[in-house]
Image (cartoon, one colour):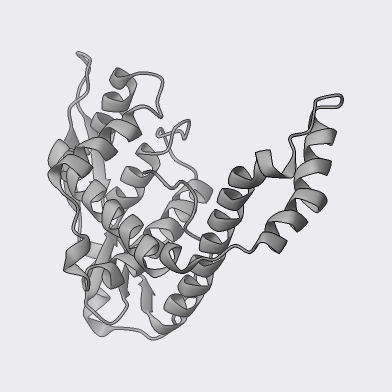
Length: 239
């Protein structure tokens, strides 16, 4: 399952400096990306953007990590990405790494090869065609092996969030009834005047799902707020 946008996009910057990052500005890695056309191959110059340590280890985030994040988002331009898009991607990658460092403490949630294949197929469906999906991967140098690694991480994140939050969500009948009266019915009437409004019983399952996802998102945001405060996040190069 692809949970788009569930991770928050605000994080705390930590001012503590690490002297061994002095060499960050001179570390450059050139990656060649093969294009599906006779023109010369695109050149992607990589650089270190940030490091993050949530207590388990120090993870490095590179410019390529941000491009790979953008490549997996439909309708997001990849040519000369804006600073706003890059910083949004950076916030998402930081949040993903924070959750991943916790998720990896639970080896039982490791995804199977079939789950990774299924996740890859789901991502491909988000784009206009399989060819467009493959072209975006090629343009940012995202190999099949690296994509599988990213999908493995995302599956671990999904399973961890389900384990930590979904299994403990309880939606009361009063909450469902209140949402139906205060939100569901008014919203439906505003969007589709004249449409027959489903009864509470007919709408119960949909409302319970909506409230469940809202609680999981709220709990995840609270978890991330705490994780960002505790983690050591060092910004190395602006994007």
